[in-house]
Length: 150
Image (cartoon, rainbow, N blue to C red):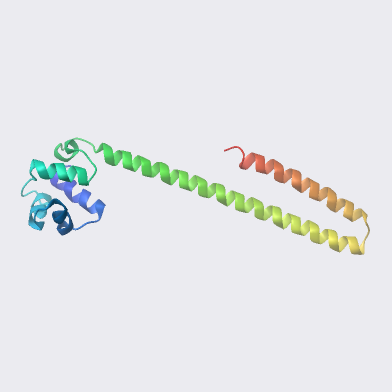
């Protein structure tokens, strides 16, 4: 990629106009336009200002064959951040689903226990207690498995 292409793409990445860049560099808008159309090249002073503004090095700007280490690093950082966010989102979703299932099971057990206790016998109350203990152990197992591991 040549200098003029890099200047155009970097400006677009910053989401600024030629006029805004010209004001930052204290040059005319036409000068920026000429740089981006490959009619002329920025002076060394402007190259220094451009490299600082775009947070890249001059080597990247002037060397057509040099990969932009800064952009590669930014892209890698962005990918890692996106991966971490997705992983955290998945983990949060798992927690919500798990807690929801636990609450539904608990409510069903309590409802059945209350309904059956009044109509059948106290043997079902014992079954309720056993089921509640069972659910607590399952909850503890799943909690340790999903949330304490990471």
